[in-house]
Image 1: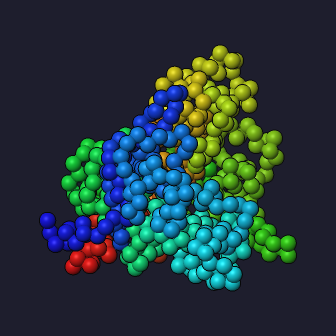
Image 2 (image 1 turned 90 degrees about the vertical axis):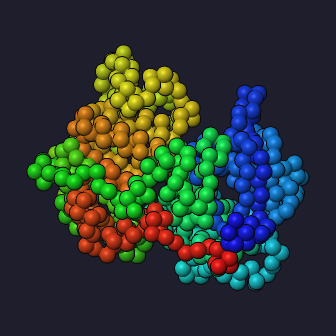
Image 3 (image 1 turned 135 degrees about the horizontal axis):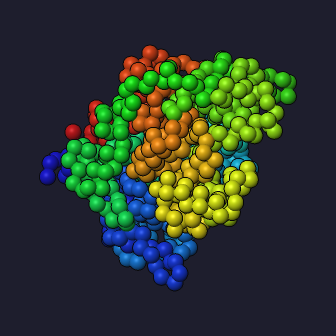
Length: 559
């Protein structure tokens, strides 16, 4: 054992899990979720728990903080937090450790924050748990928000969650986790829905808190690139068991388990030194007719009662050739969502033209748009919210056919089976409800639904951001296959440049409503000319894992 390893092991762990097995009571029996898991987290250390949905990583993390659902059962093993055994402990004992010893940053800021209360009030509640009262609470709240990386907290403290960006809301969750001055913070997928630059800033800040204060961080993530970038140790879970653990270098250079190798292969940034490798080198897009043209489009919104106007899009132009994929990338607030709404004809532009197959949508009434709208369809970001929970898969897939009164009942049922074949789902899924499907299966149903009217253009709004990396890979391969078979054109909106490199022929980079760079993916990603494109590329997870990172507090102490 080396001297650094000896010193690291000499530090008492904040959390020590030994032989943990747990499951969920379903139909009178316990279905296993975690099997014989052992791990520890020490002060000044960043540990990443990596795995796909259903791997057991969230069950393990929530067991540490005593937040498992009522139907959860701990079958065996030990969990010691700050030296206190919490398996079998009274709720009062476990509650005393929350906030004070272990803080939690949940995945979804809009679920983790109360939408009816100002953010300052929510942070103050966590501060008062430490016994602080009176004016000192307000001072502490502002200090914690500033520590959490929220700029100008005096301006934001009275605002509600919906008035903040995704990155700002995530910083508020960090502030609430820090309010109890914990020894360990558990971050459950803290950046999965954020743009790469915001993601990088959030992770940079969390890492700096660990390095400077000596607290510990346990990151729960499905993204091996994020884990390899940030962690001192990576623990890989599959089907409830730990299949591999080690330093990022050990995991990336010499992975032992085949599952780990699959996760690495599904993270393009890790395979290419942090630089997205374009799938298409030659596009030929300029020689093809455009199915969608956005010509010098601007869009303004009235932001206040006094009539002040906000420019969401400013002279944006792009074209989507028939049978090809054009991607739009940019940070939050760049105008991506507004552009997508205009492309679908849901919003009229303030100026400019949106032409589908040569017809200006802005010049048509909704009734006259309806025949055209059969030819372009949308796949939404969240597969868990895109489908009606009361509809079977069959009902969801054929609903557009019913809306347009296409085919007889027998023909629609036959079409539903054909569509499931096209998206590689078994026909046995036709009678299932969405809550009986995984996230990847739901997204396949959403794609099948979009294909039901045989469109020429499919608009995809962050279609894989909520999915595990290996499932992302499957969905992207499916989209490429469907494009080859049916000649589909895609307008693909995403914040993930590695995904865009895999799927798109051409790309437009948006920043504050303007196109700052456009061209083939190979040209734009291979030789970015604009500083904003360079910034997006530099923020891709995986680059530091290859090029190296700062040593941890423990490593520096050992040196």
